[in-house]
Picture: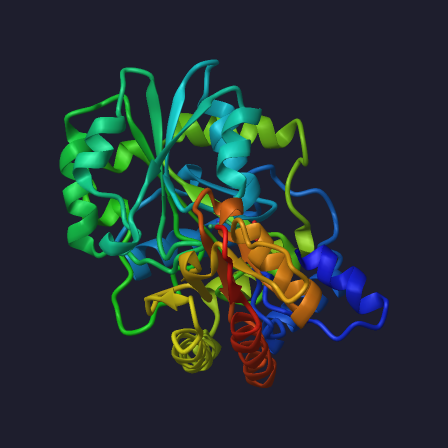
Length: 386
Ligand code: PMP
């Protein structure tokens, strides 16, 4: 949708893009300067595959400080974004036919990564009325002897759902009975929570730490999406296998990004508070406006920078051009083509009928976009035949 929006913009069409999964802020200045200093001081050569030592040391300290997790430096690996770390973990561990439980709605990449690594994604629906969170009994029902991983993403993309420590403890209770299941905790949105406490699985269930890979990075917390730096911490044998894969593919992420990330992880992070304050203001604005729209409703998410909007109320309606809105893709196209707003249909996240609105955009753009979304809903009429 972002590409489609960009193509329209190139043709001179006025489009507000709310489909992007990245902060609209610049990388903080101290981090930029650390990157520049790395270039100027010749830190521009190959590095160890797992990442330079001072970076892994900074990550070790971060995991202890923020999450109470004690990892050794050889239990930490750095990759080209959290994305590569997740991929390496799946690629390193899955045998053909191994199953990976993916609670849905989920980040678009998980099912395809599992398939690329030879595994079978097992999608487990998390209902809106349960806050889009995985229920312990649904986890239990999805586990088989072939289950290798449970993917847990909190705060969640696309729903913004945040698992509390007791939510995680309830899931851990199930996992204790199934020793073949590991947990991939994708904590990439950790810092973007609004009035709730972030928790991660290895913290909620310290006895399971040898079965957990904790994944995080600097993309969202330090507005560094383009720098491509993420990391994972977990059992030594898994980390070693992940490093083997990384060594034979990318070798490592950019040395410059690694040195900049030391500043992002160990340096002053006061900017995160400013990001959170701004995001929370935008979230409240978008949620308020969307709930005024005919046929749309959404919850107030606790984290990340997305609002996941239930659009069941517009399905079956007809556009002024005479097209019936059959699904969330049709609705997203109606918003884009006729009203110049780019959002992502829920089907991309294995959940329909929803749309995901990213509020990582300036408030004036959000105001304009929400006005257009309300107008787009008003323009729809009831179908005689649907
Ligand atoms: N996990 C989730 C849930 C995400 O939404 C994203 C980015 N869209 C990533 C991982 C990847 O982040 P990175 O930029 O660190 O690769």
